[in-house]
Structures are given as structure tokens and as C-alpha cells.
Image (cartoon, rainbow, N blue to C red):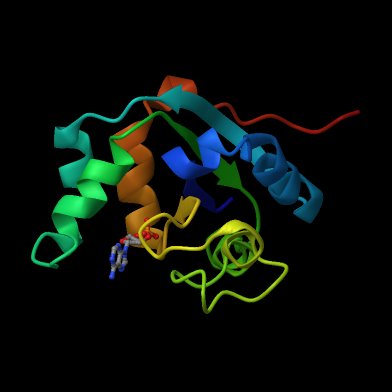
Length: 143
Ligand code: CMP
């Protein structure tokens, strides 16, 4: 079963959107297999966002993601990587469609509420960066 990494950023946490965001992924039919509230270190932020190291906004990005706690999650389901990108919306909230998380709640590209893995490769890398295998629990829905 496919898995992806999703993270409510400090702005989403501070605006009280954790519950709303979890609800959207649950309603879609995906399964939460891991979740934790976490203060990210600069070292972890620099590794997580390593592909953007040469971008002019890199420093701002690291400052922001370490500015307060995040809510890190792993979700499971068929095509969850692509589908969750659709639910999240375009990177820049000014271009994100209404009905998407960024389209409904975001204003700034640097503070865009949520991060979601963009490929199978980055999902695996990001899940391994934020979670140990015993923090991820797969279970059968019987109720
Ligand atoms: P995210 O999906 O977490 O992945 C990389 C992040 O870089 C992206 O969301 C944006 O929040 C951020 N980003 C992209 N472009 C810019 C920009 N021009 N200025 C500031 N931050 C940006």
C-alpha cells in the first residue's frame, strides 16, 4: 500500500487547522498510520529541504519551518501521493484552487499551511527522516 508524508506547518498549527486537515484526509478515505507533534531542528529542516539549498528563499524556508511546532503525519492508501497533492493544492496559495487546503486557508507561498511529498522517492525519504518504523502502525479496519 502506498504511503506519503504530510506535515502541517507552523502556520497551520497556530491557526488551529490540524483537526480540519486530518479530517479532509480521513474523509477522502486515506488511513493515518503515524502522527506526531514536533519541533524541527535546523539540521533536520536543512536535510528535509536539501533540494532547495541553492534557492534564494532557502534561509527563509528553514527559519519558518523551525519557528514553531509542526504536526508530522504518514498517510496510507491507493495513489495517496498524487491524491494528497491534489487535496493540498498548488504550492503558491494565490494559485491554489478553492476547495484545496492551500486554496482555502493559505495566503503566502512561504507560509502555505502544509507540506506533502511530491513523488514516491521523496515520500520514502521524508517518512524515514521523520519517523522510525515502530512509530508507523498499519491496521485492518474492522469496525
Ligand atoms: P513545500 O511544499 O513545503 O516545499 C518547499 C517550500 O518552499 C514550499 O512548500 C514553499 O512553502 C516554499 N517556497 C517555494 N517558493 C518560495 C518562495 N518564492 N519564497 C518563499 N518560500 C517559497
